[in-house]
Image (cartoon, rainbow over all chains, first blue to last red; front, side):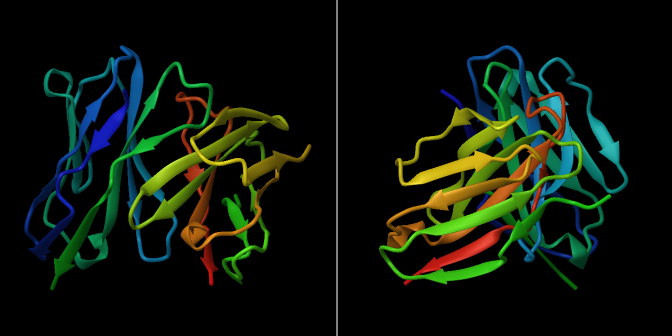
Length: 116
Length: 114
């Protein structure tokens, strides 16, 4: 069965703090893809990153970094020196290689609130 | 380039009515997927269309249907609306609809059923 779990429903931090959003996934496939999306109040899902199951290298993009560990089926997302503009709901998602097209399995989302 | 456009942005319908939502993908994208987002169930996959054919379907009743036109624009239809259909409906477009390519989402249509 495919499943994505984001155990943290809400996180509140003060600006400039570092914050890590957790994501744990379940899949029987050996080839799969993991994503992070950001959803601001406007509703649009903004793509942040895509990772395939064969690439366990951590990735850093500015203040954002991602830690992919197949051994623990986790794909965690860290924001360094958070800013108020980072306030949004963040979703982790999974797509299996054998899906016939277009299907992403989303976690329940983590609402991040960054206070000034 | 223009992003994914969904119309209308907001809709209020009465129980029992039907509704049609529209999604115009990014130019050149041939895959369009639809998702329903509710506070209780989160983001759930409805269906995906590629080159006018439904290629994948989620676990929703037959009241939810869709189609795709030759210009890749897609519509989804919900018949006999129920209160529980109130949700944000998001569409996503992709070049091929497979994992090798990214999915770009629209801003959604917020449907309220009263």
